[in-house]
Length: 217
Ligand code: B16
Ligand code: MG
Image (cartoon, rainbow, N blue to C red; front, side, top):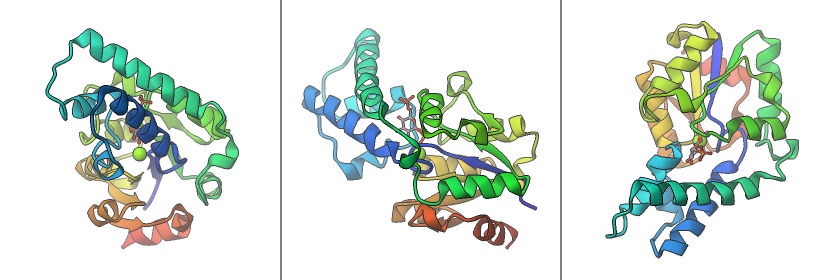
């Protein structure tokens, strides 16, 4: 029986995945490095530093740790400026309703976002109270696709992973959920849906009834 739902943030609850892309794109352009939307799919769900490493690896020059820190901070500044005006209107379709449905049904709700900006984002979306737990990504040893973040979320909810499902928009995230032995729900890109246990192109299709039906199969 379904007892817990663990959400990814960027790309599932709100479209900040687009802002991450634009912020990285701006940084990449300044460095004369390539980055397009398709290649960006590989960055989704990865930590800030892991993303930067992948982008820099596209070029031939090497960067010191100090330079990397500066570049990562720069990207984060671009990103922070973009999320400054987020409001409840930026919730993806059906997500606010789903959170309410889950709460009413007594299903526990967790957040497993790799983003250090997640607390600021959920605050601006005015959904911070919806979560029974939020994993702190700064305290993890490994990022997605490692299952650690989803296992920690289940542990913090006090639930066995097998009684939880995870919702993700990134390949690395789907891999993390599956390795945590949870039911993986994919949303968005066809390539992500294909790797999930169940997938939908649009968040509007994420209702409690649909999740339960798929989970119980
Ligand atoms: P920050 P998620 C992830 O969030 C994003 O998908 C990824 O693009 C980003 O690099 C990562 O958070 C780190 O974010 O720089 O804000 O710490 O999809 O796991 O909610
Ligand atoms: Mg995501």
